[in-house]
Image (cartoon, rainbow, N blue to C red):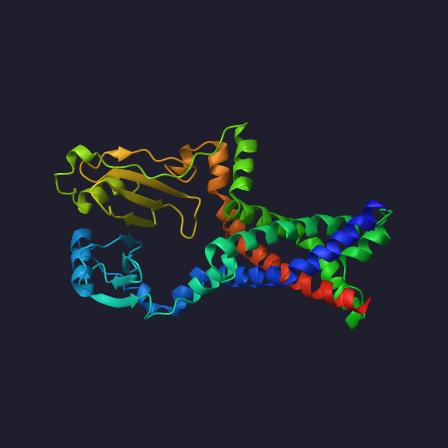
Amino acid sequence: MRVKNICYRLHLWIGLLVGIIVFIVSITGAIYLFKDEIVSMSEPWRKVNVENRRFLPTSQLLEIANQKVHNSHPSAITIGGRDESVKVDYFGEGNQTAVYLNPYSGKVIKECKENGCFDFFKFILEGHLRLWLPQEIGKPLVSYTVLLFFFTLITGMVVWWPRRLTKKSIKARIAFHRPLKSKRFIMDLHNVMGFYMLLPMIAVSLTGLIFGLDWFSNTIYKMASGGKDMAVYTLPLSDTTLSGRSSASIDLLEAKVKQETPSAVQYYYALPTDSTGSYRVSVVHEKGSYYKQDNLFFDQYTLKELKGSGPYAGRYQSGSFADKLIHSALDLHEGIILGWLGKLIMLLAALTSASLPITGYLMWKRK
């Protein structure tokens, strides 16, 4: 049996097997791509009017939020630009709450409880990552489906490839045929759009597998690092011999971080949860970027900078090539690395991958 024949059969039956899941994962991915833009328009409490004065001290904003929710143990605080509200998170079993405050006045703008505010994009993301199934079932199901989808892309390219490379044969495969009749149009949607979006769909698949399958991300890291194993992401602990002290003020930590990175666009402070925990600070250098951010750790008593492990820990610019590759996977996955053009390309790739199972099924049914 010829290679093209084998690839055709693999392409067909794998496509039919995983089609529904590919459609769901692709559509939810397309919706989630523009989460930040949609949220900024649909949730006005995330914005404030710019005032000609400084923000209130972070410790004071935390105290105001604590009083509002009657909880003295906040989990994290996010401080953004001068036109953004400050967000204080409280994470707990079945009791997740977010409080949005005006950073200039301390006024509480919005209190959002997990059961009181439906998070549309959290719902979409759960569908994208695990089909709304339990993590231990949904995550591997989605991940191995994406792996099979990657094989359909490769086999599809083999099937698409003309026996003879002529101008006429190539044109027949990269352009829609006129007039646009239904049967031929469906075939063109599958073949032509599949060709143009092949590389973005491969990029989406491979970067998605980095998050979904540990063995795959470890393999990519080894290849990029020349054989080194990828360190597990761990959080360093504070000096427990000083646990009798009270924690250092977050205001001092903020001053320390901002002195080093005054031009950052957002600061996320994850607060210690017990006497051994450390401050974790995510410093975002470019709006919307997951790659251009530092993940720093500080002893909660002395504010001495601590060293974490894994490709996501530390300053993004100081990582190895392999660290940077893994760290940039989400920016590549969403196209953020190329700005608006990249996001538009990934949107088209997501819509195309959602359409492939449908057009493929219609072509098979007609045959």
